[in-house]
Every structure is written in structure tokens, then in C-alpha cells.
Length: 93
Image: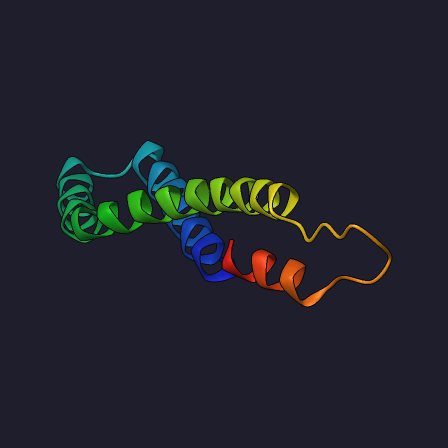
């Protein structure tokens, strides 16, 4: 997950740098070349950013589901010591 955050932060930093470069008063030909180069690079990278966002959302949903699953299917014993049948029933769920 740290790798996804790292990639996402690099992409955001590159976007900020490009925005700063494009807002400075450079000749129009240089701006057009920068825009074409950036669009060639970011077209494949756009799928990476979308995938990273999807993974971040999925991780959050996975955590919530894991907490729910553990709470709903925890080992419940009738006494202080669990019997073998109670442990078997827990493992099968």
C-alpha cells in the first residue's frame, strides 16, 4: 500500500511541476512540446492512477469487512474452556 501512495504522490508532484511550467511565460512552441510530451507520458499513467485509487478504496472496504467477519464469527464457548466440537464448528465457519 505504501508503494501506491508513493506512486500517487509522484504523479501529483509531476502534475504540479507541469502546471507551474505551463503558467510561466515561455514561448508557445515550447509549451506545445511540453504538453505533447506530458500527454504521451500520462496516457499510460492514467490507468495506474485509477488503479491506485481503486486499490485504496478496496483496502478500506477490506478492512471494514475483515472487522465485521471477525466480530460475527468469533469463537464462542459455552464454558471457560472450549470443547473440540465448538472449535470444529468455529473452524468450519
